[in-house]
Length: 175
Image (tube, rainbow, N blue to C red; front, side):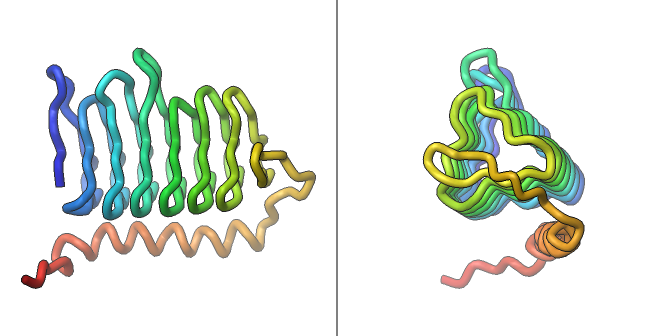
């Protein structure tokens, strides 16, 4: 694990957050309480700012970055699926980004917005609260995220918060 300062900017990692040994967190980065940062994740606050709220999960091999002087804001209880790329975007609480998806510059995802696997949310695009976006480029579906879906995903989100608690003592490297 590399958690490193860059040009005087030092990452801040919240209580009970877990950063996997193969993840990199660099520069002007804030990671909230109870977050899970998975294997191979790269969170680079070298010339932009990255803020990740409480209880969010950044799964394996994700890349999070921001433009010079820009900011990537990720809310509370957000799930970012394996291999996703987030760049200079705003992601509100409880949003779900599918595996391999891209959320580009100045895009905004509303609360409980869902981005399907492999979708590409274009620069400046908005995915309203409780809506689903799929495809390349992403198009917003009329279907609205319902209470049953939210209940199911709340359970999945809690699973990652639980992993963040278990990993510090359960992770043992075998040589």
